[in-house]
Amino acid sequence: MIRTDLHMHTCFCDGKNTPEEMVLAAIDRGMECIGFSGHSHTPFDESWCMSESGTEEYRKEIRALKEKYRNRIVILCGIEQDFYSPQDTGGFDYVIGSVHYLKAGGEFIPVDESAEILKKAAVDYFDGDLCALAEEYYRTVSCVLEKTGADIIGHFDLITKFLETDAIPDIADPRYISAWKQAADRLIAAGRPFELNTGAISRGYRTSPYPGNPILEYILENGGKILLSSDSHSKDTIGFEFDRFEEFATEKTWIGEKT
Image 1 (cartoon, rainbow, N blue to C red):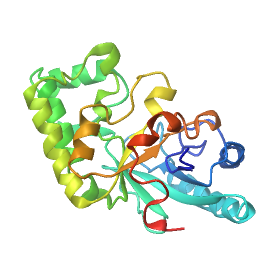
Image 2: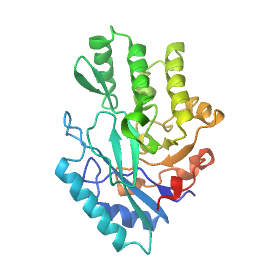
Image 3: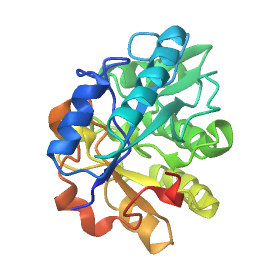
């Protein structure tokens, strides 16, 4: 099994456990390298992210754990940088670049909170056209690397979180397919890995990871890199189902060996 997991959240943002509890669970699972990736501060929505002061405490805590457990596991201090976050990413070991919101009409619309929010946003800002909303999402995603300076592309097709229960967006629509292909092509060319994220499976939203097929196949067929991540929000889901999806990973350990 792949023994590196770089997408993990703690009680510093919307995770359930302390960083040390996560470290000890990772050691018990035989992990060799873990990375914490607290949600960057988003001042327009502070319900799930790290606060500004909490970010400094987070960094301090991870530094202490690196030293305490240095002979047992490699620990990295990363951040999941939202596209619209003003957070300074300097000094982190790595950055996951993610799009959690669309900006329309001066409002920040969360794409992974509920299907109802997406439907309402389509009516309010896209003339009821869910595919137009999805096109705007992928236009934003296509710019995530240049906006965040990320090392890893977070949950590329997050907008499909509710697909298995609400069938939105229509992933068979040619406009939808064209939108994600354009975004994927631009990001593949940049050479950064896409994460294969099992978090929605562990939390019961989906039975497949991000990105789903055929996006995953397209990325691999066109030379894109894949890095497994659990997007774990609790100590019980570190490395979740890595054995099931290991065959798709092209990056087996920490990219660039920045340890």
